[in-house]
Length: 278
Length: 281
Image: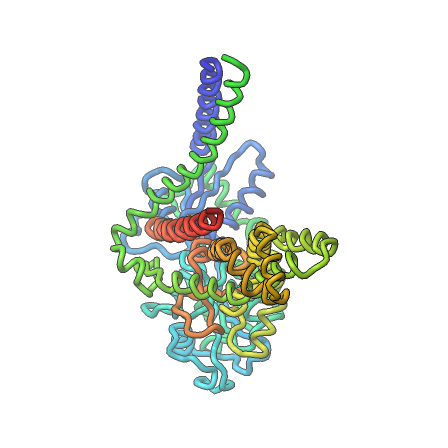
């Protein structure tokens, strides 16, 4: 019995040691990139490609939210912060570099006769003030609102870029991914939702906002305004590996990778995204 | 130390470890969840009807109501079907046929819930949307699917309790001139009451705990539902749909939702235990 306990303790110790090591690895050697959960999947794809080209380098990408990322950069816990919102007043001591842009499209069913909404109408629809399509000249049907869950970066962006102070109605259906929202909207004639522009496909219709179509040209010309930048945040001019990684992202290869994921590059030589790829 | 004692202790250790896992989970949920309930105030957490975690409003009353209605709906669908099926299997069918049917019913329990959810989403939801209106993602769709999901629980426990009745009950009733149907309705079902009630309560526990299928077909609106065609959110789906990006107070609020669920499930299981003990006594 005594012996059994001894060996158990030893196993436990081994486990703890392994756990400690696995924690250490993150901080030892390599670049840590922390922040927005909206940017995270793209940063991971970029890091993977970068590490493939530079097998000796290590990049650790971690989520946590834009504010957490900015905080991590400031305290030195991470070299690079990811943010899917612009820096606020108190954060102006930091350097932010936009790596790519993400547009949000408001989508309705293909057969919805309405194709153009004003910002005010969208606000009133999503806050629950307008409940029927007829209030905007459509059919006399109850609007099915579809939104993302609380905590989602896309919802946060929609809230700040369109809703402002108004809250999204609690009666809205909640789906936990862009794809699920697209699915609901493509099935329900009376539905309206919002997703990343890159995920709009032929099964749904992206409405014009204030008469402006969400197209790559309109985004580059700053006409379509429902756009958020994905930022990399640094405390000082990036150097060393952080600079190498940033340079890779801003290079045509990095930008192309992001554009293929449905984001919009401001560099005009980069192809327009293949809408509806996913 | 004898070999036997060694084995005995070994098994005790294993048994304790599974209980301690339960204890650990409960401890963790409470440590994470209770501070937020304290901070928000128990009353405004349980009875508040505004769920805007990013703005600091944590009211889960709509989710409690949602769980309640979906569960009641599931019972309305599953209870008559389940008990009728149990009566059929134990009393009315040929034993050979029952031997074929029983494993098939058990198979219902083996289907992963995501398959039920997917089926509901593809078949039931459009059907409800086209024929009854509304978004289709609704309490009605959720109740129908859950009602099917709890069938195996209700059928197998009810059937066991019917078959466990002494033969003399049936023989006595028949010899007094009661028909087969009168025997089932007036004698056997009342006698097996406690087992059937236990099966209902365990079915309710299953219904309240179901998450994946409900995320897919309830629509998850965090609003007080007004009709069975409305979307709703249950306690489990509240955790399931928002855990991905939740941080800070929001994350704690999800754990607090777990605390509420924990008490509900504990209550239901204790009730089931009480009823099944009463049946044996």
